[in-house]
Image (tube, rainbow, N blue to C red; front, side, top):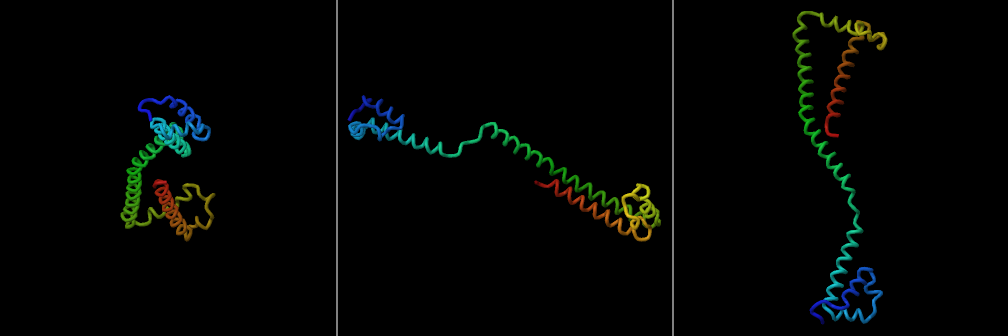
Length: 170
């Protein structure tokens, strides 16, 4: 047993580096490693490091740093957009509520005066030249308007629901 450096240490290190330990080494070198503490420690430590290296190499490699940076920037940008869009959604809902209240107020205030706005509503398809788009039965003043108003209200409701759902988290 030697206390300092061993004369065969370089030979064993070369065999370990080339991956030839213990298959390609002579039996006297194996017996030397069993007797020499320095060489035994070298084989033990180097073998452990090589096994750890092989294990680390078998694990899936990390993507390139550019992709990691790009993904981090994308996450940060999406978080900022989400943080900013919350107040915008609140403003959209508030604007819709104010519009509906204004329409209801208009109907309530103007209803006692008579059918001035009602006749204006009946004339609206003609003023917008919708005759070409709508069937003649909808434009008839007796029954067609009763179908047109609920259809427009349904369209407005579905449109607002679509805008609300589209502005939520995706």
